[in-house]
Length: 214
Length: 198
Image (cartoon, rainbow over the protein chains, first blue to last red):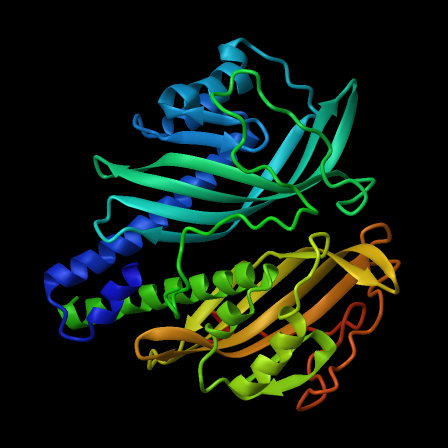
């Protein structure tokens, strides 16, 4: 998308064109930070901070396999009502933790500079209770997210995370690709695409090949 | 700063951004075995590609031969690669026409091995070269050196590599960068030291 803008210009750019280019770089940078900030908040259970990263006009949140949550209302329901327990003080045992590493962001800003898409992959380690027992797991997944710029700030408009596998550290993805299935009761709709390994499912891309345009 | 200098700075930032995307796209396409898409990222004037012990493949034609062997066959769902393109350091040459990039790749994989299904960890390092042609960045040279390739169950201390990655029979030359753990080999960094070499 923005690549075309790049091609149009060579030297002798005027100030207006130059400003547009700088704006684009700033936008990409800001969105990359937004996504990584989300990751750090998520790992530290900072749910209100996460809700605030979403636009008031947010489309949806879908964290496979929890289901689809619509609108900013849905954003609040999953992160605040469910993950944060509605703000009730909650004792997280010290062993319960996760690190979701936000890797490989490819961010494309639309030509009008008002919306953007980002694809990321996540490598994560987590320890969670399953049944009555602590479990430690490796997991991998992809984001295909949409961002929107409002009042000069980038926010999440749509978040979609799709998991490739979630396996106990003792087993590995070949032996046990999906540890559990945890649809949340308050979701607005079931997951749109939950096809963990070894389905061979490819999470669709938002972007075209920058060289061939296909 | 005058307008011309400013433009140069902006172009530099754009170039780095575009090359980072190129490398990450390569990763996403490779993992999904998207052979034509991977080929589209290489310059018509590609110098060479070299991956682990498979040997050196020269020119775009050579690159096509190597990737065809790796990616062009349809595979079943349980065979997979997730190669995470991490920690890129991209340096643009002063004339703005070529660049180098150094990247780490932790990865999870599942492949058939000795008649069995195996789940493996594989780590490696890229030292790549890029070239700008008609305003777009392409791969000019790709080199990936294996650090270790171990089974999920064993770990790299016990099993640094499941087997040796042999040269493909149609390679143009023997591997130049196949010194996996625990060889003490250090991949030569394409970048300069920001302080000592300044």
